[in-house]
Length: 85
Image (cartoon, rainbow, N blue to C red; front, top):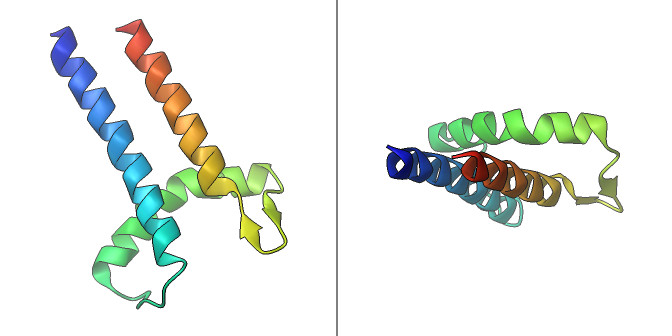
């Protein structure tokens, strides 16, 4: 049972981190913001990034640090959950 729970937690957090990375890469290239896939991507990642943006003044000089902070926080939470198993 522990291996199944470990796999689920690990995969979910890895997926969230990958989605954030995809969003970062998309910010560097022109894309259609009305694409259905991108709307889902933004909806998922905004639930993680928006509270960070509201809580911390993470934008400096046009550079948004919230994905990096989210990446670190997700890794920390994932390790916390895995250590409890």
